[in-house]
Length: 131
Image (cartoon, rainbow, N blue to C red; front, side):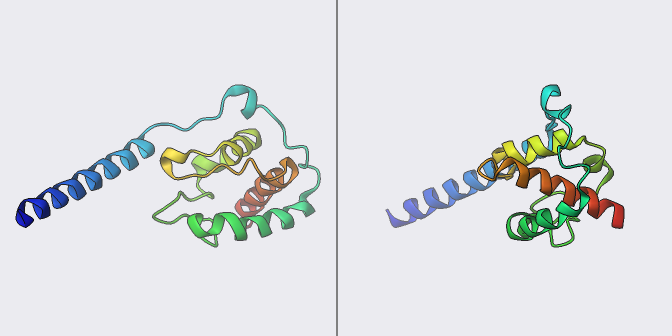
């Protein structure tokens, strides 16, 4: 009886591991694009580059644990300095920060005030120019 239970537990754990891996793979393969109405929004702080320092603080508190201190990505999250990310509009980045993609592990940061999320976008842009 114990042996059957142990085999059932092992089978269940293997199933869950395979299902989790499949979910991660699906999350990486599917495109994650902002809707046009969101992508076309301009950053209202774009003429205030000095405000990116506030975005840096939020990045260090909320984003670096997954994207890395240098934003160059980890096994958990993509490189935010990549051409693919930096080619996106400010509005698209704002939408992604706001909406999240929980199936791929990206939480929503919609609870942060909108100006703070725009500061995060400024910070990401400032990192790319330093590179």
